[in-house]
Amino acid sequence: MSIKGKVQQITEIEEKGNFRVRKLVIETFEKYPQVVALDFTQNNVGLLDDSVCKVGNNVEVFYNVRGRAWENREGKTLWFTSLQGWRVREYREEVAVEAQSPDREDDLPF
Image (cartoon, rainbow, N blue to C red):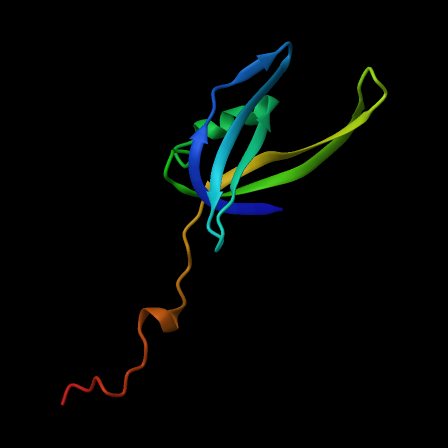
């Protein structure tokens, strides 16, 4: 799966024992934009050092959905969902040829 948006923030690497995580926060281009945080873990944290990953850049992020259940001390089950990024690339909106140069019969040179 992938999601497209403008980079809002890139967090520093957080280390918890041998586990490393870093977040990429983007705002989508939808009619009602959403702010989405994607986790990059372990060896993928370095992907966010690429020149494409700068605040303000438009990117396409490829990710997997991860979910897990956890039971707390009281016996109540809680569910967690995360989006784990594994690839980031520059995103450029494609403009249809018709939108670039419309046929206008009333724009004749003579």
